[in-house]
Image (cartoon, rainbow, N blue to C red; front, side):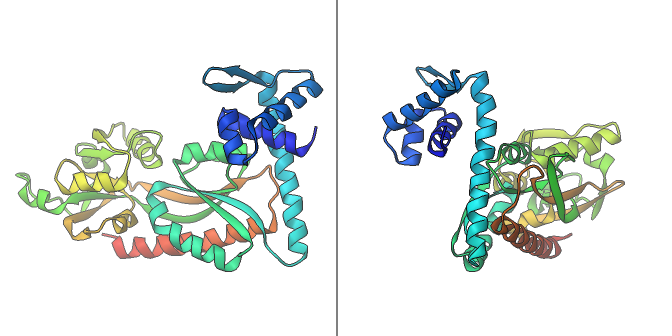
Length: 311
């Protein structure tokens, strides 16, 4: 068993295809097949089940995949630490960002990363919080910025920002409404009667709204499910419903004057933005520097946008 064999196996397992793995690794497909076959012969077990659509993991394959990821990660850590001894931060860092934050932070984070760690490689991924938690546990992500993650013994967390969600309405739709404009502040009970446009589960904001409504024995009135914040705001602007989101999400929209914002009280819906990483995997100097960079940049950006957009 050697590192090349393990890397070949991990790539094939993750991509579910020898063809795709060969393209990613830029090696001939027969070589990948030979690496996996050598592992199977050495371990006396089948690791992959071949079918017409690609490959799937056997039970033995699932066990080896977890160990192989850990072994490859440890090797990468050793290499990066040796580079750090020479004074250079190198290696690869993968960071997950939620869609609501990705547009605000991707460009400044990339520029700062390149300036501070020119020899390191940055990989940014956009995704929902629940899915990124699984990627952290599997080692596909090193760090992630998540909304309201559940406490877990295998994850470390650091609070970046906390704020109350607000109600967002279309200004012209409000003026044309026969019931008149909403007051500056609405109760959670009043919110339960309004037609909401919300992302589908497992979006963190959707889950938070539902859990807070449950506390007062109500359910949100979801009239449309849209997985895209700008698309939600477009529909809100046209008067098809209301949105419950952080104030800073309006900064992604080009025409903020088309909306009115309203506080939600009795009680507030508080959302926490957390920086999360695995408690089970060692962090290299590059990972630690990236963590501090993400903490600094995300907190500064979100706090500034929230202050400018607050009702």
